[in-house]
Image (cartoon, rainbow over all chains, first blue to last red; front, side, top):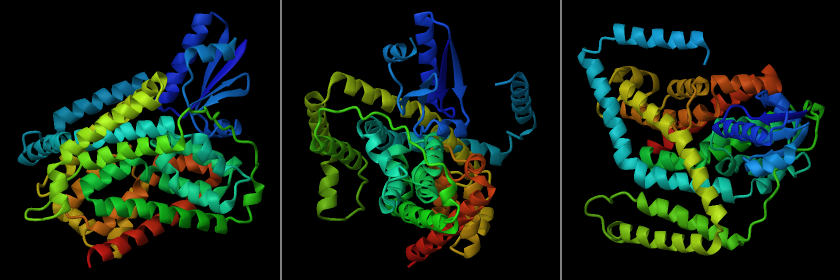
Length: 77
Length: 391
């Protein structure tokens, strides 16, 4: 099962990214756990300095922008 | 929102409706002031100032490469460059405090270290394009300029002081790789990007051009009478640039990012204006808080007034841009120019909630030191500015 983390301290863009990720998961019909990470220490430990960021199975896929749903799908399949 | 929080909100609103003497003349006057101030913003500042500024902020967020700026915050970047970039990069990187904090934490713990990180934290919220433009427009260009210069200069001093005080501990940090966003290549040249930004800024300046004082001659009145023609001409140039240099998805992204800022900032600013109007009233119109209190606390340019403004600003939380209407109300009610600048510098940089986050990142000792430096420097900046303005 894919472990997907959305990093962000609660800005509007982070919520938007979370929505897109959930939609991508739903459209693909895969099993995945989507977690929102708000702890600034965890965010920093990934080396991310611009939020929102997307982490799939511990690997940073995107930071500082909201990727398109199609892009997200290629990362989580 | 949890259920008990909803209940608490309902009870609060009920008590407010029940207990507050809405019929008393002062409350009526204050309520009227709140909406008159909102109307003043709607009529004077939204169309010619905020809307162009939102488009500029959107353009910066989409078209300026963040990676190009962020690489100066890495652990290996030259120190002098880190400080200079940290003190000015808020104009490009930071529009809301939720972007400032992760950047700060990253620079501190994995990048260039405590000096550049604190420099960035100090200047970030003060020098984004929206803050400078609205400050200059509403509070006068002198205060806008003083805010921008003060934020940059004192950011460098704050950073250097922090780095010096904690010079022995700086080595203990874990330096690791920073994840930088990929630099999506553009097909535009630097010259094209620069002239595009220039046209946007010119539109903002010309459209916001204030009526020159009666009887003045020369360039300014001539410019003022022609300002809508110039603005129109600039808009045509802008449209040509957009059609020639930008792909369709660039344009869509620009509008989306602008709309994002509008959604994020406009409601908060509106609420801030209403609160400021209710509490303080427009300049020359008293409201809920009697003017003599404000005069006694932050009037003139004494050390006490400046210090009080700095400390109050450091603890208070200002949503993006709301510091402007609040300051407008305070100045109208008798706040001195020096204390106003002190509050503008210490206010958006620090607040109780963000002190807690900073504390969790770099520990209590460093946080207390940082806050003290911010308060002291802002006080000094306020006194200096008050002294110059009073000459």
